[in-house]
Amino acid sequence: MNQSRYKSKLPDRQKLDSINTPAESGMDGGIDYLSSPQRLREGDYANHVHSLGNRSVQIRMPNVHSKKLVSIVSSRIGKNTDRKSNWFDAIRTLAVQQRNQNLCVLTAPGTTTFPYLCRLSELFGWTLILLTQSTHQSPLKQSRPKNECTLLNFPDARVLHAFYNWQHKGNVQADCNPNVDQLMINIAEECFAISVRKNGTVHEALKTRLQKVVSKRTRLLINRQLTPQRVSVELTNLGAIPWCLYDQRQLKRPPQPSQRTYSSSHKRKPAILSKSATPKPRVTPSREDRRFLIHWTRQSTGPWPDQPYQEFLDDLLFRSPTRGEGGLSTLKRILAQQKIRGSHKLTKGKEKVTCLTSVPLSQYANRRIFRSHLSRWDFEHYGIAIDCDLLKKLGARKVNYGTKSDWNRLCKLDRPFFQLQTTTNIAIDWRAEKEWRIRGDLDLQSIPKQMAFVFVKTNSERAHLQKQSRWPVVPVEALKNLNRQH
Image (tube, rainbow, N blue to C red; front, side, top):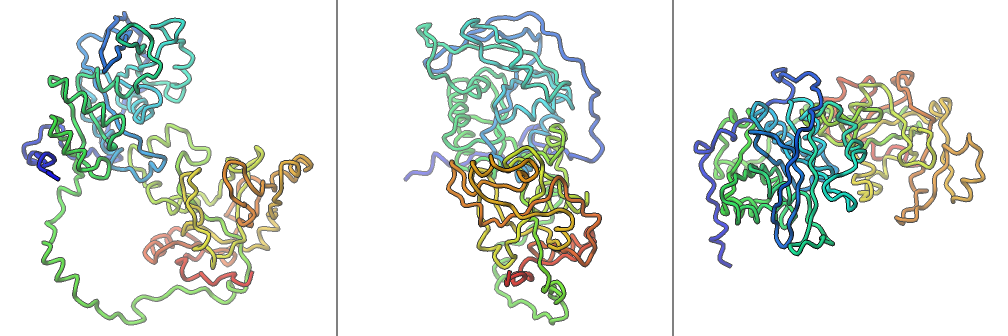
């Protein structure tokens, strides 16, 4: 296959324009946040017609004089947002660098960038133009309540409303309308693409824009973790302007060794360490003879329990140290708050409970599984184990597994300790979880040092976390035989 057409023509770093600057730091105190702005008043509207493929779109656009229309688009980034720090570095840096420019940012509910653009509008004063599809009854007017519900989490965002309606060229309403990302990419004077999935909606729309509209600027973030290299090369060959984001630490990093140096050093035999150099953590016999209930921590894919939505977005946008490490981040939060927060998201009923399990640590490797319906792993390498007899005194009870008819026969006091043994949409037998529960939150301040321990994956994590924990911290591998008899 001839690969010459995919040959990269990315310019040297020194030749890149002013947008290619180091990422703005998230929490250095140097960002001057705006005070709560007043909601902008909508002025006059003008009707525009744009052509996109075999369809046309009518847009009732607010007149925003002498402001440039900009779109910031991205393919889906999934629920695992904690691990997308590069993505959030890019959108945050755009907000900082473009905050004083005379522009309006196009956005729409349901798009990947929408909630983050709304939050950045509150913080940096961006003016947003919210695109909403019009109704059949009123082709160029949309009922406001639906829009306002979308913006309830962002009362201080600067928002103007625009309404659009897709039509075939023959003035017949389209049965299958294009994606709103295509519309934003098509009509923007300048488009910033943060992440582009191969053959996705954003990819195809960017190719169409670059092939047909040479006068409009299209900027593409060059990052292999967010956009495959082949896609980046293809779009830059079509005319996209490379946009590179560099971390200050990366710019100051010393030169890396050559491949030859690395290969030769890699072949050297490692130095022999004495046994006393790396002491192996071990469990004392007193703990081995005790039965524990375990709370396994998982990666958070949304706000922490009782965390405001805006604070959750700020954690992502500004690289909060409380996120980014999966189940370890959750464990650190528990130790900092000295509390395991109860929840009712995965239980039948509305009463919040704290969940534990009697599945022994010796079986954790066999029980570790990815739950696709939750987009996360169960039985990761992090958690806290607490003496079972002590938890019984605090109200812990075994979970009863059964059917919906069993649930209907239970009294109100017993329902928090019930779980359906199987679910209809996924074939999982939940009885294998061997779950225990406590009503509400579990306050850890009353748990003595000798009645619990914390476990992590590696020795380095253990050394770091022991400074924060008043209970012993050990690597999970050192505990694999614990509770085997139970």
